[in-house]
Length: 241
Image (cartoon, rainbow, N blue to C red; front, top):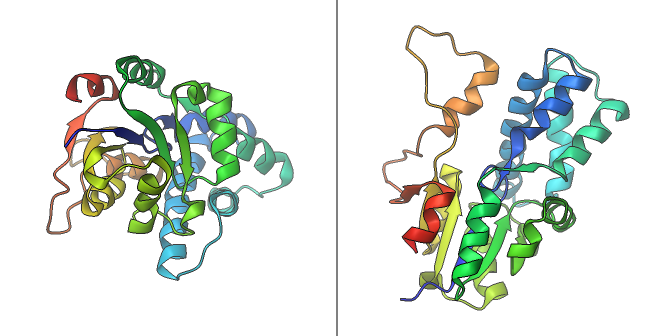
């Protein structure tokens, strides 16, 4: 079947969620890395909890809530002076250096729709792609708001078919998140896993809280099945399609 759409996850795949570190470190000296790592982990946990409870509060709400948790966990009072600029940075995250190049190359090849499917709320994603300039390469930016569930629930991936008018077997889905790759594969998409995050150090090294996210991101999901994803870098995509 011909590939008619290439769909990307946003957070952690096209955008570096830890580009909040510099701002966090300015506001919370010596705690920037710890806060950014806990923030992201708790953010993901809250999305899964919402779907498991069959409830839905959008990603903006969960991003605020997880930020407040991370700040308190690091011993910082979550006042507006701290939380407001940090949330605003989430609307202006840095794209990974290769993101524009890869999307530009795919756009120049033509023949395929390019889109984002993200847990981000509609308003957050609109601001993010506009601020970064990636909107120039995209045919659609799809929020899970339309499903009122979070990935990896299948209703989220079904939004791609509805929005882009393509079938499951006509989509390549690209993500750096193992749970997202597994969910997209289970739904019926062809998948590409962008490997990000460092692997573990020697066994004798202590694992500090701020390292835990990197270690978790450095390994594929292992629940008795493999997502059977093509492992690649963003810049490899034009040659793979």
